[in-house]
Length: 275
Image 1 (cartoon, rainbow, N blue to C red):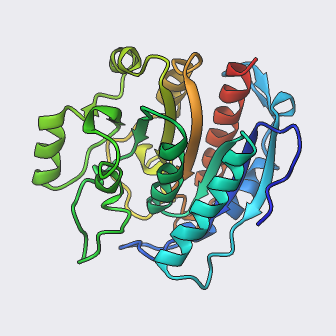
Image 2 (cartoon, rainbow, N blue to C red):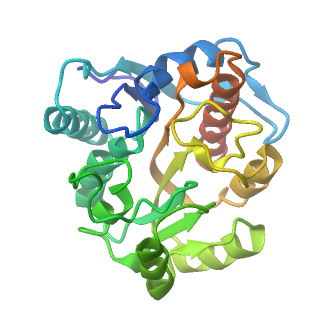
């Protein structure tokens, strides 16, 4: 894959991979659905008062992951992220399941010292292994801790996991309440450190976002999401991803349009931050 050489500052790229998904598969179709819906929604955001047409971003398309095993798929995601960073651009990965976060962050962690991670999700993802596999959507947060300290991982929206996961998170104070107050506390810890944002869309309540593999009751509203990202305007974002849209789980396409709106808001957030 060749990364577009232009003045664009953010590069979108799709990672259509869901081999390690455990319940309802289909997130490999997420990137295409997000693009389709992104073309249908308005460019202007009344929430952040910004316009996509003013954001310097490009779309490098989807990676060819269809016939690859998990190891080969993760390596290709790594290689792509490396090329984007070589151009001094911000990688924005579209999943796919949450495992795609791992290779992106492995590369970013080599370039940026003291990386901090905002992890929005319904699930802890802190298992050591899942169904005998250490590389899974259910283990990705634990795999991140193989190379970053627990003090650098900040999880929001968590409401599902094993007892051991919650006990581990409690010992290391990883999980925070989804509120502006908690975000303010976390932002003080982040300071001017490089920040990566990973957003599993199942953080939303399934009443407004049913199109995901493992929906969990009690999620956040869209309004809560908007208030949350407004607090990130002064952060130093160096990479991000949006994952776990599974279009077959929601034939109404409501979830796809919400996912596209999330991507729009995050692009505008970075665009306004860089001005």
